[in-house]
Length: 77
Image (cartoon, rainbow, N blue to C red):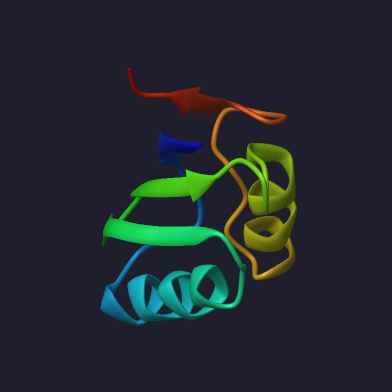
């Protein structure tokens, strides 16, 4: 099943940050990028291949943690 996912990210200040986040997301199997802008990303995720926590961990490792503490990942319905 594919699920929309909206992320609020901290640490993004420029277009180079946007490129870095895109590269990090491109490396995750099961993630389709709808958009990445400064401070946010909208994705479609294949629930059988990945989950919000795994995506949050990859982004935090890349230097762009999900904003407002902890796994603040918001599902879009």
